[in-house]
Every structure is written in structure tokens, then in C-alpha cells.
Length: 224
Image 1 (cartoon, rainbow, N blue to C red):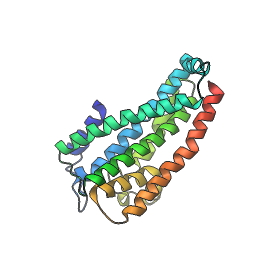
Image 2: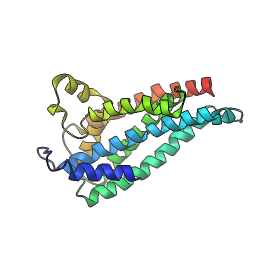
Image 3: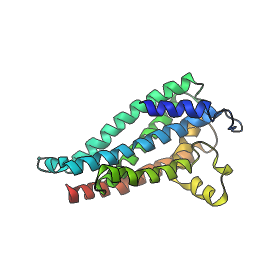
């Protein structure tokens, strides 16, 4: 609850003045990136929690119960989705207090937040797989953080991609975090190619779930 608020306030008041985005206030540019950054780093808790459950033998106890193997992971990812919905709602309220304003309409804001939560759900499956593939919580965190850091900070979350060096720009422009942030941004701030950007983001989200949900269930069957 506290960490996302710190990020909103820090980027708003520490970096908001020196960074200038043509045609848009920095706080408006920032909020979609902060939403995605928060749910991305929050997804690490999925990996850590499952690794800890595995280490303590809790998953073995679940395995002895008359329940589907996928139920544990579905429950975990659903719980993460509820937590993320609360965090995003809280961040949005604080964002409005510090100057953020949706530039489209309430439906655009709802659509943008929904896209954020869908992406959060897809990341829960990625980090479920990582958590079940590591021996303990410390290893899960060590394996997860570099992945998230690269994708979040080498993205359009905080600065336009065009300001980055050539090779980094090519990666940042085409990776899923940037694709989703750009789609959320166009939903809440307006801009060209809304349909294309949203469909591209949805394609990444669906693709991540299609790949990592079966992998996570497969890994759970092997370790639990």
C-alpha cells in the first residue's frame, strides 16, 4: 500500500520538474507508467510466496486434497488480481490529488485501468512459474527482480523511448511493458492509433497467459 504511493509522490515531485514531455504534463504522462511499474514489481510477491509455500511443504499438503492441480495457482493469481485492483485504485486517487487528470472520459479511464489489471494477471502466471522453479523465497526474488527491472526501466514508463540510444530504443519500443503502457496512455490521454495499440497490448497479454499458465501448472504438477 505504501510503496506505490511513495513512487507516485517521488516521481511527481522529484522528477516531474526536470523532465518535460512535449504536449502533455509529466504527471499525466507518468501515471500509466507508474501503474504498470507497481503491478510489475508487485508480481514478484507471487514468485516469492509460491517459493516459500513450496519450501515449507504447504503445496504437498494441497496435493493430498481432492482438488484440481490448477486450483492453487488459480487461487493465487486471483488473490493477486484483487490486491492489484486495490493498489491501482489507491494510486489513481493519489494521482488525482497531485494533478493527474484523465484527458479522454470515464470510459477511457476504466478501460485503461482494466488493461493494467489484465496485464497484472498475466504477469502473475509468469512469476508463478518462476516461483515454482526456484528452491526458496530468496532465490525467487533474486531471479525475479532483474527481469522486472530490465523490462520496466527500459520502457516508456518514465521517459519517451525516442530519447534512448539506438539499440536500447529498439528493445524498449517493442517489448510488452512499453506496448501495454502506450495502450493505457492512449486510453486515458488520447492520441492516434488507439485500436491498434490496444489490440497489440491485448495480444501480448493473451500470449503471456497462453504460454505461462500451462507452464506454471506443469511445473506445479512436478514439484507439488
